[in-house]
Image (cartoon, rainbow, N blue to C red; front, top):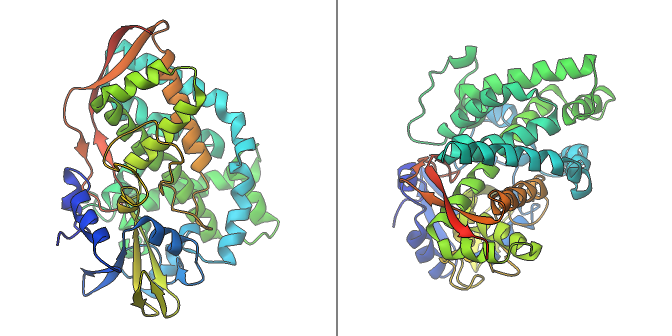
Length: 419
């Protein structure tokens, strides 16, 4: 059996055949890892079952990494992602109102403006690296606007995010003391000194907002801390870290894979062009891009009690790993799952952490950004249709955690008058 935890396996593509083999086996598959192993949860309904029962499958016990952490590292690295109720409920409540569809709609015009600016620049250059020119700058500029981070710092935070992703690969390049870090790497998220830099940046910005509050999310977080709403120093910096990384990296990945999929399946792009003006078709395309991309490949839980899943007995303390990359290609849920089809209806993909309390806070924001980018591409040449064409192979991230792409050369092609 292929070792699906080996980052090198993902240099070319997700090992879908290996996951299909796991899904076909009865019960759960025990996968060796380091000196022990984990139960691989690969079927859609089983992933849903784990996601919906946090009292059985804990995020806080052992965290959500594949590997185990020492007790001090568990506490130092704990964020909302690695927390169970009641702390998870409290932390989520502090920011959830900022991420409701109603409140995020205020950012639609800004997002549309950024998308238009980036696509216009991409067209003016006759294409280039899609990640650098469009996929990376769009989500980071939007989330930084929501947080209240100066946009001139966007490139620096993208750089830090890239190094965080690198921490999940087999070849991290930063020395332990990069960015002035003096903390043991095991105490830092992604075991990366880039986390130290992001922590420092968040702490500096938080101090500025305490002194001069503004209408932004960082102010909301520090004011909650100031009025005793239980946001500790570590909670604030870990929250800032999660919001920057998740609000940037996962949407960037979806936008990149979406562009490549539409280029590789021109019939689907033609279908979208022919249906321009049909918001339902655009929404369906957004959901299919998210299913196809599956930006986060897995999350771990730990059994809090003895339990049974898919007919498999699981002991308290066992690791249970949900493979979203597999559940989103489950033949029992998706017809012809290896086909990119923008017309899928009731697309039940699990690209935002399945269901349950850990469903991604930024799901609506990610959908909005992808939708507005598609609408921008559909109208970027006025009465003429644009399509994207790949000019080379993507430079993929060798990571078992994020389905990342470092760069991919894309070209805009004038396909003639819009039908």
